[in-house]
Length: 261
Image (cartoon, rainbow, N blue to C red):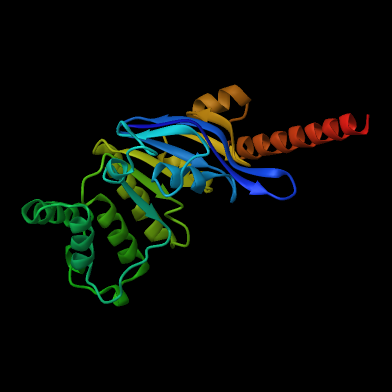
């Protein structure tokens, strides 16, 4: 359902010529799978997701969503994904029902299909009690549910969660993870971007660790533990980051030595 092949995004840089926000990143996500993108701030997670959602064009490499190339078929890609971030951006004067209905119309659903989808989504997310609650009076948890509802109202095969639990309290974050698990059970391909280890351990079938725009490791948690001889996932994560920094220092020293000669 999701295929990223050597995605690269470069920006001009006065000091070095170019800055690689993303450097030949590849991964695949199947139906009914939660694929984690894990990394610290600035690792390249959001850049990758913006390319997948057609907000950015890759400098090189390619990506396909539900068989559609993100660069050549952006319209089809946008109708094949739902995107949820930590920024809920709720319209304060619209009710929960009106907001989800509005997004359904933007996706081109006809009246009968939209009505049926909204009833299903509001039941699925346990939102019937907040149908008529305006955005200005919504709690954080209510706002996040509305964000999810408008992302899935058109029943996309691919869902992207970009740091969606950021800033949520413990109870709301737990409810969010439960919803994501249920969407996996419904057969969705899910990309889950985070920097929180326990969320990866609880949710993800496979994970890719990004750092400075590069992929350091990809696999299931047991596979990564076996490959790197480390069962504590948090320790494994920091071990990979430290090793990457050490390699960068060595490469820099080698370059300086060559220039000196």
